Amino acid sequence: MEYDVKIVNRLKRSNGQFQGVLKMIEEGQDCASIVTQLSAVRASIDRATSLIVAGNLIKCVQENIEEGTTGEESVQQAINLLMKSR
Image (cartoon, rainbow, N blue to C red; front, side, top):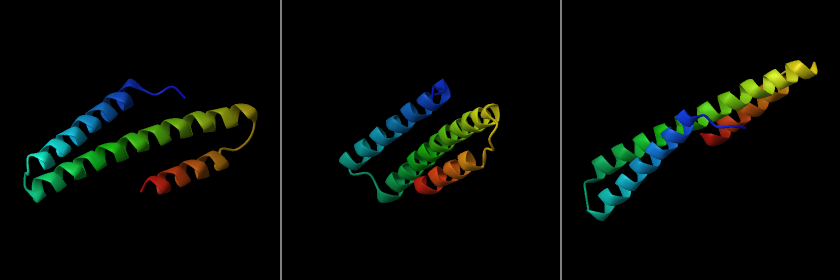
């Protein structure tokens, strides 16, 4: 699967946020600020995961339709991936 530039950029931002959290910890910043930033990192990664699964789902369903089969198995696989990431 070819990944969208938006996904790559989102993950780079997530990495930058995570590096910022590490710096905050090293500097001894307060717990509330650190937890807030960690929540932002988690939300960003969750969004990237959803975009990747959605893109894969669309591709798999299209391939199944072209092959003459239903997309039910692809949908179930995507649901399983999303549930695993939670």
